Length: 84
Image 1 (cartoon, rainbow, N blue to C red):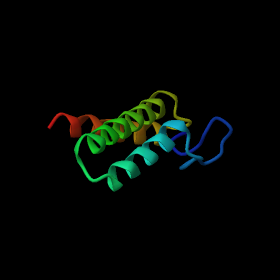
Image 2 (image 1 turned 90 degrees about the horizontal axis):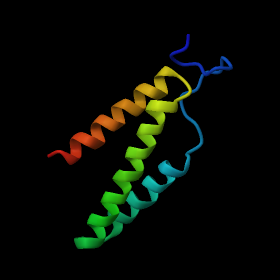
Image 3 (image 1 turned 135 degrees about the horizontal axis):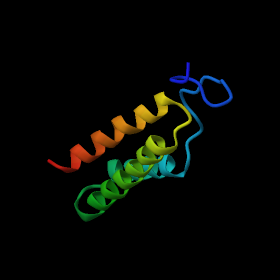
Image 4 (image 1 turned 120 degrees about the horizontal axis):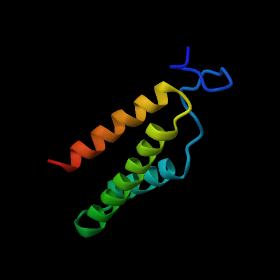
């Protein structure tokens, strides 16, 4: 079933984090430990940009339909959180 499997037939639910996901984790942690103000806002913005990039890449280049659906879901959450 192509939903869970990649082109080689392996089931792929998770992979090693790539650069956008690592960037999101680092800047989300920085936003969490910063006291507030401009530094926190900047770290939150950059972390959202990294997460948006990761989600877009998963949506357009994901190895299976599950990963593409995951990318779409995260993309919707990221965009909708910035529209409030």
